[in-house]
Amino acid sequence: MSGTSPFIQVTPFLGVAAMEAALGFYRDTLGFTVFVDQGGYAYVERERVAFRLLQLDDGARNAPGCSHAYVDVVDAQALFGTLHPALAQLPADCWGPPRDHDYGQREFWVRDPDGNLITFGEGIGLNANQWDYRR
Image (cartoon, rainbow, N blue to C red; front, side, top):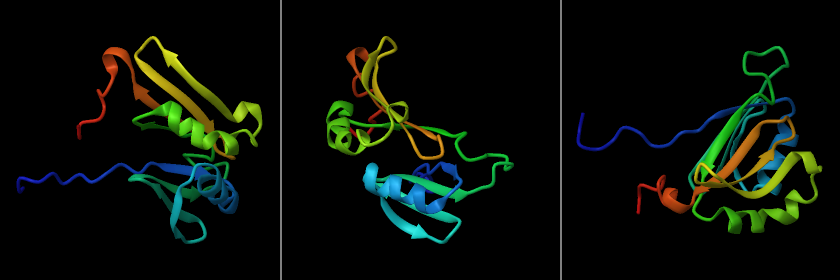
C-alpha cells in the first residue's frame, strides 16, 4: 500500500420507511444536500458528513428507526442555533437541546421521521478538540 490512507469517510446506512419524508427531513430540517435519489436508496451529505438512506420494510434486519449515528462537530451550540428554527417545528420528543455531559461532550440529538437517532457533539473541557485530528 502507498503512503496514503485508503480511508475516505464513513457513511452509515439508515433504514427509512418512506424515502420522500426522509429526504425532506435531511434536506429541509438538517441542511443536507441530496446527491443521489434512486427511489429506495439515497445519499445525503453536508460538509463531508454523509448518510446512505435505504428504504426498508419493518421486517428487515436493520428496520427503519433502529440506527444511531454520532456526528462530531466543532461548535454544537452554534450548529444547534442554526437548526433550531426547523427543529422547533418538530414534536418535542424528536429533538433535544445542547447539554454538557460529565464525560466531556456537549451534545444535542435529533430523531428522523423513522426514529433513527442522530447525535451532534463536541468535546469540552479536557476533551476539547479530542476528535478533530485535522487541527
